[in-house]
Length: 311
Image 1 (cartoon, rainbow, N blue to C red):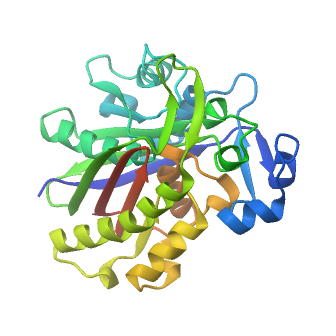
Image 2 (image 1 turned 135 degrees about the vertical axis):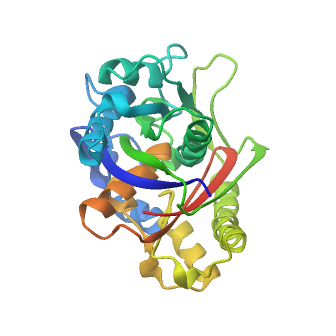
């Protein structure tokens, strides 16, 4: 099987951190209201000069350095984002230019909302199998703050800005199992015909979707791979809401410690949340080579994706 190995990770955050009390400047809310419903304590918002692109470049440079891979060795670059500065050029093209990567490689954005990083990982693997190098750089980056209606307390307190990146190697003997899916649904939407409308979300519909999708993805991955959940060291879900993760843990009947959580510090960073969590696990020495990992993303579209592999 052509699997993947994780060689290096990185993350980048804006300079400005806003705790829940700071959000009361924008909307009628409170620290207690936000924490009780979401588990979020703070988030990061971009300030002048910071964008999804600048964050992506910083995270990517860190991942390349930690992977020990020269930029000339990268065979493809995928950037998962829903909040890039331009329709054209893609955020991936801007990152490619800033990093000075080889011009003869495929580079593109992947738009699958909060499942985007895993869609990008799946696409990068396919590109490498097709002959586009042995190493892929995959980035999830978001500037969600510029998509928000800061008068809507049901959405503006939930999201944050950030980027995470990972370098993967194609491993002919490596483990790799994936699932992806889509259900056309307007429960989350941004833009519209004039591309000007801020984010709107049907929170209850998204919650119901998420608490059924996470266990379903995990069970499908285990069935396809012929594994038991006890053989998995870490489950890293998209970091959207504490109650979503807790409900998924109960449905699967596993120890909560197996599910990594950091949304209290970053809020929902959409496509960046899984790679940011991966970088934290690696930096803390808690995700070691050979450990089996499940990642599950879900979000607007509605989209979902799951990947099981070894670190």
